[in-house]
Image (cartoon, rainbow, N blue to C red; front, top):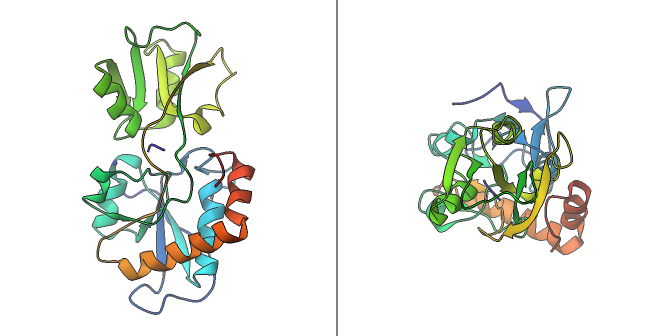
Length: 239
């Protein structure tokens, strides 16, 4: 998964008992712009796979949680500075990120990255490839020595292909599945295996809180409910 200003006001939800420590309310930070992982629905609420997952994890961990929408490019700095207590935003677990924050175990296996373009025979190496800034996909394109153009949001990367600013976009296949087949956009056969699984991010000082979510993730894996959510939202392969 991909997928570094505090956004709109937090969307509150109640899920079980309060955390018996410094976290009377656990604030979950998400981007709200990466369907089907997380997005804002027509009612103005955070929705998607990670909303369902986060709500269930908070219930199992007996935590009182609320949701905070935050732009992707500042999502790690705003966690570290205390604007929320955890990141649940389709973030891949990487060594580079683990130098700054700690992760739970993965709640999805690695999601393949794919390309969408207006032509199935686009020349990736000789073209201009769009990616969201501060993502594994942007780093991958740069490592290949290809021409990279970065945008703040995933929607802007797709728009760049539609308007001819870019020849293709590289992103998580689960996201590109939501746009392929519209406006002449086609999914290329080539896929990239980059990054590890997706996990929740925490400040390094919050080991106890991270442990509660880790235990809840384990329980969802063991009873099969995590695979049910993965299949419902089609974000990844199942465990």
